[in-house]
Image 1 (cartoon, one colour):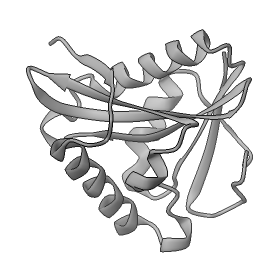
Image 2 (image 1 turned 90 degrees about the vertical axis):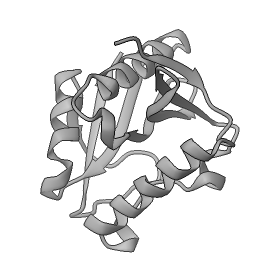
Image 3 (image 1 turned 135 degrees about the horizontal axis):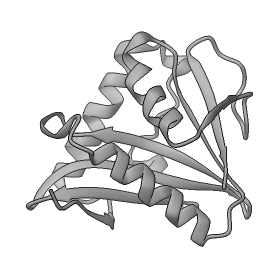
Image 4 (image 1 turned 180 degrees about the vertical axis):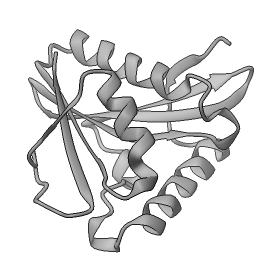
Length: 153
């Protein structure tokens, strides 16, 4: 299965719908003050590069990099479309974001994900790429609904 990953303008109806689904899912499993997923306006910032993954012309998933500083990036907005779950899309996006982070010269890539059971597949995915639990970074603070992870590049 060929997966095309490209920078996305966040204008297409498919990506808008996937991000709306992503936000709904985050709010289902966490209280509002513990949801750190960005909406469209939050993702349209100059420090964020947003990627979409496509298979045969269909949107399969997305992810983003937020530059925290010249040596540290944050993986954001990971989501796989329902029809493509467990088909390698999330792994391809994480691989792409790690490779791009290395090209940018980052020495570290971090992320925030959830602690409810529904986030366990995401945690396992990140662990498979060498991400390890860490404390809060950037503007985050301790939160029982947040798990912080980082990877030295």
